[in-house]
Image 1 (cartoon, rainbow, N blue to C red):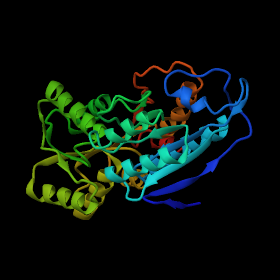
Image 2: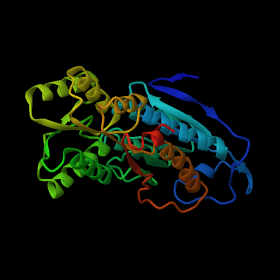
Image 3: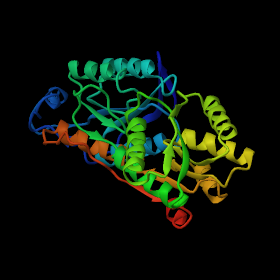
Length: 329
């Protein structure tokens, strides 16, 4: 069911399970106290309303949505997935947060787009007494309960290890493509990759990062131009699913499948590109766990339990043709 709320699209209907509702016998600490203030008496069951503020509609984010909604069903939460009217648009994400605040939710689980631009959304929620948990990425604001994000620097370093293995001791020139220089997840993956290459693989030359800023046609052009201008290009590192798909399609058209290629995430089209020999390895995160744990940890906070602010890393694993069957399961 889809509804439009000014600038916001609700892309998943609210769900309410009849079991597992939280108790409101005690007022939780900090913002959680405001969420329980509506209970009329101690011991009364409260059905919490939690919004997931999304930023994209790719398979990765749909998996986050699925984990979120499954947890809502299991724990008896009214859960709504809200997306900006324009995906990956920081201003629209901020607008969506304002609407969530005015709609009467108890809490927000959020996927930020921009480190600086989306900090104000978290601050606005905090000032309104609405607790926030960050998924996938962070912002400059410290006003969140906890975060559930891949350790992207470590994942980038593992991607460099795999690239070095693929290239062999001769190394070579590697092109790097990313979406947004303000997205912490992109920046951290790049830093992890580049730093590991400098530290352990001096034969690998990392080219300057090329950002496509949500324009996939631009990404395709960047990949095409890079291949044309660099006859000695040895590999590609794409830090998210969109850039991996764009680059993979360009490699097919150029018949450059021999280039070593490490990407991120596991869209079905990426898996198909791996099966066809275009992509050599995928760094696969756990988006379902991000969404599920977002609900679980928020409920703990709302019920007054201690939730450490330290990031919760749901993990990241390398997949190749050697273990692709496990990925498809």
